[in-house]
Structures are given as structure tokens and as C-alpha cells.
Length: 312
Image (cartoon, rainbow, N blue to C red; front, top):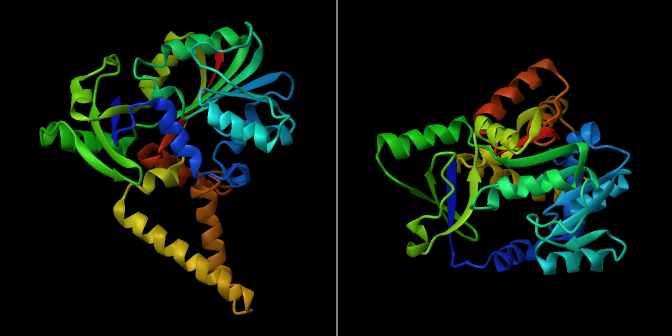
């Protein structure tokens, strides 16, 4: 397991997450749900009958999107400003303020519990959150969580930086601060002296085996674990970020050209582009080669991993 620290003076969690979401457009987030790696999982696993909780719903984009698909989803988040913005967008939206360690719902109320990129942010570990999830889930309720994946590439980094070079940490520049990363054992969730150096805890990254054990100890039976968000993992490489930036800039040029009638289709390029879009964007390739390539990319570079399991 790798523990990630944030250096930007954000010691108060509510303030950090409010600022993290302030620049987000709810309308755009809802549109992005249609190409999100979670969409096929929603369609394949979420129950059409029974209530579903989006735990740590943020602005409620998944609640809005899933309710349009016919799912009875409700949301909860501990940041008041995010819930206020969601209700302002749609006063009928069933979202409320609450702590995932003390969910304001009765026992066995939900048929499914969904938490995307949430449970890794509790420094003392996810056990208390998972215990509460089990309480509000019905007898064989479904749990779907996504957490950062300590993939092969990141494990090689750990070996190189922490074992070979004997360095305890390294820095990674981000728009909203600096991340300090270092490895800890899966059982070690104690606070450290890094708080004295101006760093605050951000999240954990887990191997598949680590998150499996955590969920099984909490009383859940694993159905499936798979890597996800391959593109997010690949963009950790600086040269790919530069390529991606050029692609984004070229898109703007193409849009402008199309407005004045200068665009034309190139079938070979279009076929190749669709092939990689199925793998890297939708993560739902139709060809056998695409499925094999996606499997390799997920194991080596996926930014997140999605775990589907049942209570009991």
C-alpha cells in the first residue's frame, strides 16, 4: 500500500474538497458520465429495483445520471456547499449532508452502495466506513467501490525510489499543490510525523490483494476486481501528457476548421482512432485484440481499480 500526502496547507478537509469541486460544472460532469469507465458497470450490476446510495456523491452527477437511466439512486456527502449546489441545480434531487461513518439512514435501507474514489481518503483506514456500509445494505446488498490502484508501474517506482535508491519519498507536481508519496505496509494506517513537515494525508493506493483483504475482513464477498481509468494512469508519464496536450490543441484547430468546411474524413485514421478510443476512453473494446490490450494496460497502468462485491 502506498500512502499519499498533500503539501498545500489544506489541513481542513471540507475546505479542500470544496475548493477541489469549485471549478467543476455540474452540467459538464453529468455529460461526462456517459463516457465514464463506470457506465458499463452501472448497466451490468446496479439493481433496477431497490434504492442505491452514492456515498461521497460530490455534486451529485452520478445521482442525476443514474436516475435518468431508471435507477433509484440517492446521494450523501459531508461537504455542505456541494450538496447545496446539487439541490440548487435540481431541488428534487435526493441528496443530503452526512458522514459515511454515521450514515443517516436505517439498517438494510439500500440494495446497493456505490463509492467512487472515496474510501481511500480515511487515514485510519476504510474499516469504519465499510462497517457502516454493511449496516445500511440489505441482506445480500451490492457494494461497488473504486480506489486508486497500486499498479505494476507504481510498484516498480516504489522499488526503484524506496528500495534501490533508499529514498523515503519523492515529489510530484500538481495544479493544486504537491504530492509526497511513500510506501507503508497494508496494516499500517497510523498517523506519522509528516504532519510536522507541512504535509497532510490525502489517500491510499492499494494493490488488488490488499483491497480484497480489507473488504473480506469487513464481511464482503468479492465478485470482481478490475483495473480502470487506464488513460489517467498513462498520463502520469510526462511525455504522454505533452502528447495529450498537443492533441487537445489540435482538436480546437479541427473544430475551427470544421466550422468553415475544411474538414474531411480519413477512414484508416478514423478506424484506428475508434479502436484506441474504445480501449482508452470507454474501456469497452469489441475486438479480441482490443480486450487483450486493455487487460495488459489495466494491470500495468490503470489509475483506479473497481471492486464489485456482496454483503455476507
